[in-house]
Image (cartoon, rainbow, N blue to C red; front, side, top):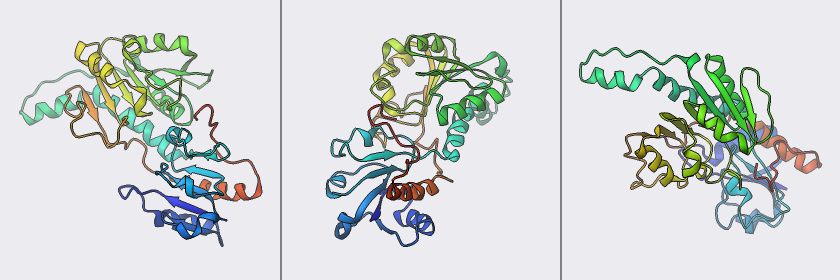
Length: 311
């Protein structure tokens, strides 16, 4: 029995780096990096960022795909992945904190007029402008799981009014929690900023279409650190051009890397970041080793995904 590591993203982590992290926790276990053609029958666990074409088909004894991160939509929807294969994700604190910081950072930048003051300084223009007050500002956080909950409480700790929305009922100290599909338009209508931390599921794909975007408060800003397919791109462009939305901060996209000719790049109301809101997986790699151990002993896996629900 063995593990295959398949990352293929040199800008983030090399396969051998992860192998070196896992090996001390799994003495005697064979861990192969990317190319394991001679050992495919041994592999029962695949640790990957995504599924590359042909990999799963060549692993006849695969029992678990361990996603090296949170979003699992592409994995659970992969047509080559047998129904019998389990999928797990990671839930370390580090990326949850980083995504919360990402959302807070961009809101504070706008609250404090930082870009305007930076531009004025470049022109040697002295033009004081009062910052917006946090207690008078409403932040909406969509998705109140591990990451969204951390984001909501981070805003609440800074004195913002925070409205949290999720499909099922949640309770979070300092956050006004609302739930259910019918409640979402009302949440959007009250918020000055909306931070979306939602997964990609049948219920959330294309959630922000023209109709839903019309519910957003005039002059509000949409921040998407969830999944790229939550947003109908042309609908967002139209909402920005029509003036209902003041701006959008986008870290995730339908196609990544974002194509060079994509209209988001040069739009004056859109900030594009290259999927960097959550980066480090500190504390999560031990769970990869633990899930291999549990897989071999028949114990319940950590952070197992409901493949039907998609998260």
